[in-house]
Amino acid sequence: MAEKVFYIEHIDPVVFFGVNNSNLAVIKNAFPKLKIVGRNNTLKVIGDDAEITRFEETLYNITAYAEKFNTLPVAMVHDLVNDKGVSLDGKTEEDFIIYGVNGKVIKARTKTQRELVAEIQKNDLVFAVGPAGSGKTYNAVAMAVRALKHKEVKRIILCRPAVEAEESLGFLPGDMREKLNPYLQPLYDALMDMIPAKKLADMFEDNTIQIAPLAYMRGRTLDNAFVILDEAQNATLNQLKMFLTRMGERAKFVVTGDVTQIDLSDKSKSGLPKTIHLFEEIDGISVVKFNQQDIIRHRLVKNIVDLFETLKTTK
Image (cartoon, rainbow, N blue to C red; front, top):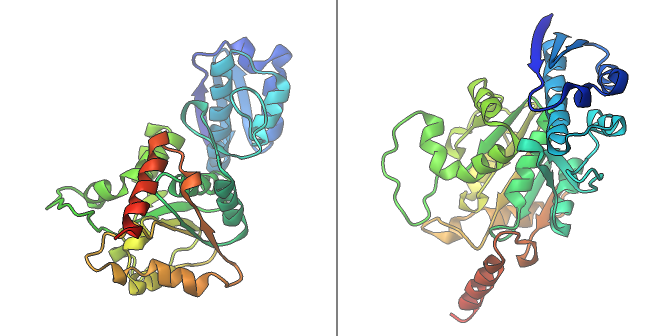
C-alpha cells in the first residue's frame, strides 16, 4: 500500500474541488480502489502504486484544463476522468490522441494521420512511409505514449539506425542514450511535447522508455512494448528482418521512413522498399503512405519537397 500527496498549485481550491466537493466526488468515483482525501490545496492518495500512477496522469489533465480557464465544470471533470478528448476550448476532439505538456491537445491533423492512428489501433505491425514533416513519427510517438498511459504496454522502445546524413559526428562520449541523442532527437522532441520533463527523466531512468540502437536489437524479445523504428529507410533488408522478428507477446511495432531520404552509401541496400512490397498485402500488417499534402511544418516545406522531387525527375 503506497501513499502520495499531490499539491494543487495555481488553482483556486474552490474551483478545483467544486461546489460541495462535487468535482472531488467525481474523481473519487473514477478511482474506487484509492482512498482520496482533499484538504486545502492538497490531495492525499492511498492505494496501489499502479492506480496512483493512473490517478496522477488523470490529475495532470484536470489541472491543465483548470489552469487554462480558471474554471472546472463537473461535466468537464466527467469527460477528463473518462479520458474523453477535450480540447482547451472545452470541446470534444474527434481526432484527439493524448494531452501533452501544459494541457496541449495532441491529435491527428490530416486524413493520412487519422488513417495511421486507426491502423495502429487495429494492427500490431504498421509501416508509415512518406516525406519529412508529414507527422508519421510524431503521431507514432503519441500513440506509444497513449498505449503506455492506458496500460496497454509496459514500456516504449525507440529505435533508429545510426547512419549519418552525409556528415561525420565522430566519437561521441557518454552512455548509450547520450551517444544516440543526435540520431534520436526527433523522437525526444516529440516525447518532450507529450510528457513533463521530470516525469520523462524518471521514465528513462527506470527503463519505462528505452533507447535501442538497431544494431543492438539482436537477441532481444520485446514483450508488452510499443516499439518504434524511425528512419527505417536507412536499415538493410537483413536489419529489418532482425528487427521485425524481435516482436513478442502483446507488442506493437511501428516502422517509419522516407524512401526519398536514404543515407546509406549504397542506396540500393535500403531494405524498406523491399519489405513494404513483401508485407503490403498481408492480413494484420498495415502500410500507411503519406504524401506532400500531409506536411504540416512551415508552409515552405511542401514547396521545398516538390522542388527536390522535380529535380530528381529531370536528371
